[in-house]
Amino acid sequence: MDTKVKICGLTTPDSIAAAAAAGVTYVGYNFFAKSPRYADPDLARSLALETPVGVAKVGLVVNADDAFLDHLTSKVPLDMIQLHGGESPERVAEVRARYGLPVIKAIGIATSEDTKQIDVYGQVADMLLVDAKAPKDAVLPGGNGLPFDWQLVNRKFWPKPWMLAGGLTAQNVGLAVQMTGARQVDTASGVESAPGVKDAKLMAEFIQAAREKPAPKL
Image (tube, rainbow, N blue to C red):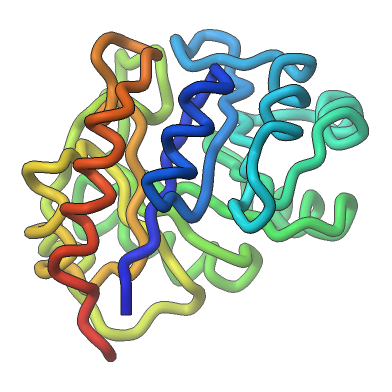
């Protein structure tokens, strides 16, 4: 079974085409204005219309209110919403019910205590994205290129489908898959030549590396 790959923070038609050609499963548009990967809803709409059928379109938001999400979902044909802020379980359930789209909830991991949130959010989200916990002084809630101790999430049973993120590159993603059993992986900065600039060669190398050692069957 091939490992599924999500590449987040795509901002150009060329990067969408390159990711799709390399075999990406999900593409992410980042709506967090402070990110170097930020795409406003108008740009994201044009990118979504360029995204081939069969590639899931994910909108990443951080603590977004209903007004913003109303505007976003009316303009951009998204397949999933990724909540990457401090959204409560109640808020995750609200977003899922209001927009009728599958919701991915990002969970930052630094210690074993943080992993308790996996079961909590697994009750309300459709999918979990297990990421490195951002440092306290970080501007970005994710996409900082930081790995975490993968042994913290080396477990057999999860409440929902999940995706591994946090400092993944073509050099370490194969090991990460083997250590954690992840069937899905996510990268943003790990396939960039500069902050926010996706590199077609790096994307292809990442996807190939993720699939060289397929995720173990549970």
